[in-house]
Image (cartoon, rainbow, N blue to C red; front, side):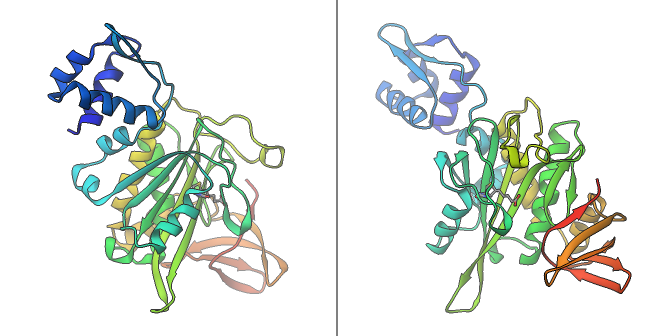
Length: 317
Ligand code: BTN
């Protein structure tokens, strides 16, 4: 285990207690200078660690802090090797940054996570409310060579992954509102934004940045979304939720289209329901009857069947 990871583990197990530099250096098997350096790195990540002569170090209770070390430690070893976690206290948008990194050649499996976003983005130009300490905002860079599934399955996989993670960690039963909003008890607790990064020379999608925003304990929302938005409302550490989503995302990405679509359908909030939507700027209504193998929604209208591949739908919940 790396020094930083091990140091955090020791300090967390004796949270709010002093532990001497000498003891840390012995337990970690490194010099006291190396301990000091590691403490400094943890501080840079936002941990509050007091240091006093003769008494040593003390980790001040941190609440639910996101931790790169904890996330990495919770990933299966094989996945840890394939991923790289980049953690930020504040960022404009993990997707915006992810797209820049992807264009600069970042490897598939790079995960950008932030405690807060100042310009969190949603679909269709909406913003995504991203306050500090209470939410999980992350983006994963995926290149087609990095997983077995076809690239058009990324959105489906992300939705299923979030649902699986929530089910594995809590007693809540999330559902997916097509295309990719995650709901619990009629409230949206998570939004997903998948964006392609194009290789202009090859004229193809070079990578996808899939952004996932989860309201974990957020309880106050801006007025315009306060009736629709909700949160997981659980005491699970955000790092644990992040690791579980990453794990489940890669499991889905290495599964078959048939299995992913079957799971996506079984989690659908809209199938069998009356929905309304816009097509070519005209309001339409119908019953959502199926989701095809491309993840498209099949709607039965009075004029026959229609296939929707994107866009906003409204459903009476
Ligand atoms: C939506 O609900 O319309 C999609 C919301 C997606 C939000 C996530 S949070 C992490 C990533 N970074 C962003 O700026 N957006 C996505």
